Length: 195
Image 1 (cartoon, helix red, strand yellow):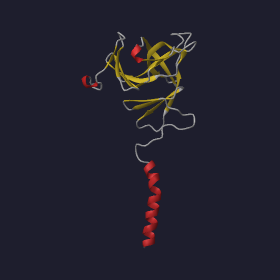
Image 2 (tube, rainbow, N blue to C red):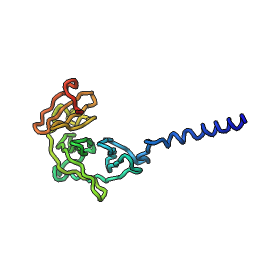
Image 3 (cartoon, rainbow, N blue to C red):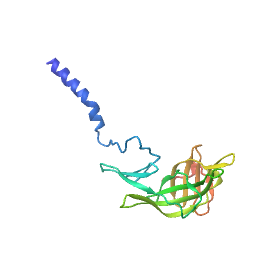
Image 4 (cartoon, rainbow, N blue to C red):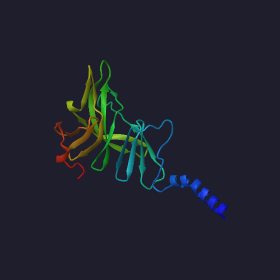
């Protein structure tokens, strides 16, 4: 009898890791050698994963991700510049938006244009940008090294009202007014961003 109890305990212990991996709510959303996720953003019940060439969406209750190939055509805004590849996904009024920097790398790096666009997921499997607004990128959000300039890396980016809020890597919270282009260092004690 003791042998049977020991055998059942050993079997239960052997199956425990498999049961843990099958627990409700756990999911492997994407995998593979070529899978690199640059940005992740959740809006409502949808998780957005940006891996530069495509945008993956995962909705709660669905078994699989959906993949949309990016269609980032900035030629209407600047023929000379190259897309820097550093886009930031953000939420605006419950919709997915993208903040993109166009850079000129000819003799030195410089920011040519900053574009804020709404992301549209098409039935044809493409993610396109629309309702694009040009922004004057403020000096407070630019890093300078010798003759080069780069946009500061932004985290926790969101838009509330007509203000874009972002935290920089040096832990500063900025608010950029999208109409006037004015930027201010926001005192966190005085603003509730998530109301």
